[in-house]
Image (cartoon, rainbow, N blue to C red):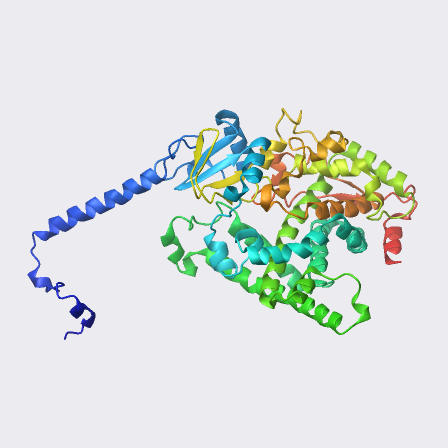
Length: 534
């Protein structure tokens, strides 16, 4: 018995000493190696070519596909130009990955709605699911397919996001937006920070009941979200999804690993605060505490239904992150759109004053402001906060309009292209709220601007909540303040807005807030502060 005891079970295996190898075998070894390398290169080359009958698209580069042609900045604009040349069903190769970009509402409806069983999957995201989030739970709603947890979450979520549910939380929306207005009045130069705090505060209260966050924790949350966006944004990290050896790099050579470690650490801390608040709320309700309030936060309700603390913690935290990203980008775009178009701002202010007069607008008032809603719908169209929808993936092979879409193909909706299609929206670069004064245009599949919320079975359920929250805040800002961007500010897509997962104004875009003491009737900013304090 040798030390290689496991070989004794295989008598045909013979371990020859190195000295017994024939030198002539070296050329054979080299030849075999060359054959293997050639086979691997051929496989890699073929993997980056278009599959047979794949949707048309730009020519590919061997081994890279279309990666060299896809810009890191404003890819939605490039995809729009390609679609004009190759058609609305655009086929792209990102290395070995098959990607189909959709640019027509009819195609989206057919594939995402009627063929939802095939097109409702999410692509595998190695960094997110193995380094950022806990692998077995993670951000379930965004990345994984856990039907049991999704169904349990959707029951309270459907009620919360229904018309009845939104009406029940209107006082909360009013309170948080009033607090934001006071912060803007106190320090208007920090408007981006105040709007971010507002965008996080509302869903935080609705999910966990938490009304106050430590400032250090708040700052770490914003920084974490910035890092998280970079980790999830295509092109900002190495292509570890399809080049596996890149996953093995040590952290000192892989910045994405260091960023992911920071995100996960601070994510756990913040989500821990949320679940702690939700558990406390649940225990007080069980004990009959009458001061706990009528509104029952979503996470508290899930705990009461028997979902584990760990599941509720990660699900609630993931939903907060998703709500924050969408809402924070949308509100900043809304503010900048009105500040950059004085004629529109003047008209919408007249509507707010006609409805509210000398009192502060409330969430109940915004239903009587059709022009304000048209301004919001036009903001969604003019500068969509999510220019490219979250990717779906096909769970089986499919054929559509003669094109073969293989299993595992990533499907992405180019919302920017749809919303800037001149055949649907004449003069698409102009900000014109009158496009949406007709309520039918707001819901029509071709003209609607709510593509930023996705489509099909994976469509965001929180669109009506987001619209209500944005209008409640903007009505107050318009009522209390005047605002404008500095003369000469570039508000074009190319020069004035950053993009990635979210399109938003560049950090150097600033606003001037002012209130005319002689005309506003409230004693200027001092009067606004006193009114809010009362």
